[in-house]
Length: 249
Image (cartoon, rainbow, N blue to C red; front, top):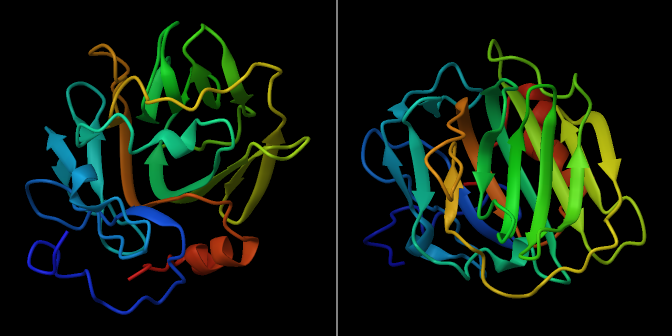
């Protein structure tokens, strides 16, 4: 990605961007949502999000930018690479996913995902009728990291909340942690199933199931950052910024 294709490329960081694979502000008015990460591990414009039928609007988000997906035909797909997101499901995976969102639980809904189905390889972050869920799949009809949160963790679509999800495959227990608004911690431990360090089944999809045209999700989202390590509590606190949000650039 060059300065000409991304004018944010050489802006100064207000947040330490070490390990920042991609950063989507959702601040565009039309066209693709641009990966604005400037870090040394930046995935570049190969993971810009191609948008279908979503609405570019802030919906009152803390930082004044955002996008609304309607739950019926709106979606995004971050390029076409099946290898770019391997760090999210591989054997020694460490990562963090952060975003601001207004969302609601619903039967088999998807926030972001690179796989589903019995032969899928990748990650799914979504919701069912009662709670949120996140897991990684190894292609053998097995989940490696599997977590279903409490029914109260995800509020409804009336307000914006800040979510942080962290995973470290190298820990003996509590590998996965979910945080809302700098608190409300929920966590779980890996299953006994083995991860695989191969390509994901699908590119990264937003607000839709990746393998079939279903699982469309009602969600307004902004300030998505995906990191290749477990970010510190202090960094998460800085991004939350007392509920006002903090842009990375």
